[in-house]
Image 1 (tube, one colour):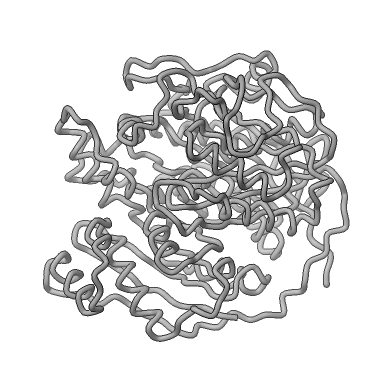
Image 2: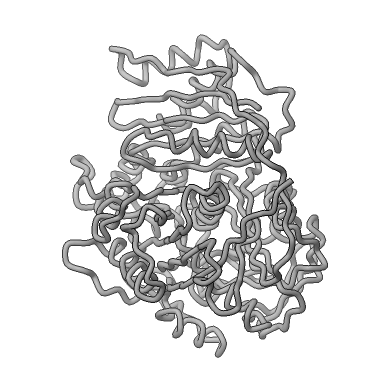
Length: 550
């Protein structure tokens, strides 16, 4: 057993529909809502004031503003080998696809955009990019925690952001999940979510001298999957509960230590119900709880970063902001909610998130200098099977259909999947035929993937539908696959994988996913992991995956 490395939150910065960090916190204290009706999107939304930097996109400018603030305040330089940039986003520069979806601009690729940002700062290390739907920001904290605990770096700057576009707003609207007013998380009269755009960044460091006032620590974190549905939350809340419970276990805190819970709180009926069940499972229903989305909307890949920064400020202040728009709840379990500020007792908090693909994540922020003990990494991860999906002269549709039929199955859901999901489906079937994982507890199974194009093949299909301006609008069946991690989510459902399910984006296979997969096994967070490269775009595919076991 060894003492756990303490990870401190240092300088932080954000921009939301309410302004910069100081302006956002002040507005929330006064109960001000930043959501307004946006004619361009035909819905309420939280738009941010962004000064676009010459040579960079709106999304990139949002991230750069935050990084400028962090590096100026902390004097930390990305030119140092001791500093790693971890970027979280769901869609990056996806608005560029509207200009030409036949010839995809290079800047539309998420990692290319991340590299452009990193070059601006002369970064010594290539950025690590996570695109895990709506948990991307919280996932970034979990990945950063691993980098710091393993000693690979001394400092990590976690940055997250997403800009609104018709691509995103029309997609969510296709699910009939958009509120007709500013969203009202957990309220009995809630009728859906409100989208927002934001960016945030925070320095995570093992150097106590760089800790921000109050010395808030990133004490624990975990990622899980419902293994239930790619676009709807679990009806039991078990997946999110596993993330919360494992984050608390890693942090060495009990329910008595928790001062408050900041949930995803999207104001969609089933999400809020699911979260109430997960919080009840964790025995935290008596803790003050809030959602911040009634102020700034659901900010996608930025939400986990922005909301964690605000949660740290609430923890230091000793109270949480009210849940804007909340009056009374009808969730299955009664939560300690209020539209007014609530005082908190306890020096740590749980921040959670959930998203498409059944993914969940939670982190624990703690002001208490507790003794945290973790087992030494004595386990070794072994590659026990490896499979590469072969190339073919046949058109992909014909090739993959033949591969699927060879299994002798009648799973009609296969034909509704995106092409990347189909490719992964077949590869995983072949892999597990070599070495299965049926004797492993579902929560001890994980899947960690990387690719270059994210979900661009599905993105093009969605954009082409938008370009037709159909009366019925976008297709939810097409939009759901515009998140790369949904392919992994499909595998979680089929093979009951309820552990970590992180999706990285990179311009080449540098083994980032395998390194993280090995760490999951070595530190005892998983017993078996499917890991590898999974990419598909324009009839070109590369799927090379491995099965790792302890």
